[in-house]
Image (cartoon, rainbow, N blue to C red):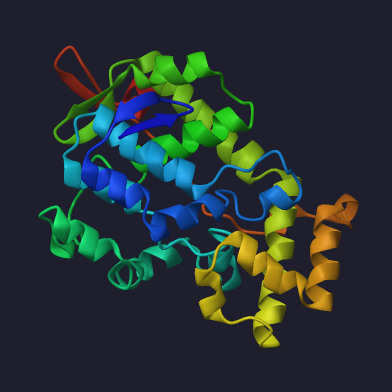
Length: 296
């Protein structure tokens, strides 16, 4: 199977990956917006968890990751609930990892274990494993963090395709982790990552959309108009449930119209703080970007 990605181009994938891409849990991600409720105030920003997940898969493949780590990359977001991290805001989960807590349950109840079995794998090959290309703690780089950063930055117009390609060309694997071979590009991605957090996730209108959506969903949960299980639907279906309620319909319309934005203070809505400090490996020498900056 040949898959095409807007950032990385065309790639051939295995039959296992093909089956997983066509599975219901992965297909569902086509209707889960990466930015939560941002699409309500900026309809042009329609990036989905599906695009990101396929991107992570490809990036792992490009960097020489095993088939099972590619699988892990493709599936890492299947437990994201409708509107992505909005559920974390509802339950005031500052680590923004609600989806990780339900990952095994969602995975086990799906068709994925049977697909894995047909290709010689089991869930134990996937769960509890240390896939170092896929995931790393902050401030390290990893395929998940890299893909969502450059993908969001690209679609929001902060970087160009040339920027993406020049950055990707500096990525290598050393000691099992993603490192960089260019101080210049490490400085570039660190700066762009700050822009992503401050001017995209932290943009007033975007914070407004997610906070107001959070308030609506809290109210509808309290009124039992929707249930926690409804978040296992996708954005389209949960939005339909919201708008079937008169309060919900009015409130969503108000978000789309940016009602009250002039007096809205985004500083009151707390987002997870994120910074990166890329690892570099150049001419046989390992160091972090911060070491270069501190010695300058």
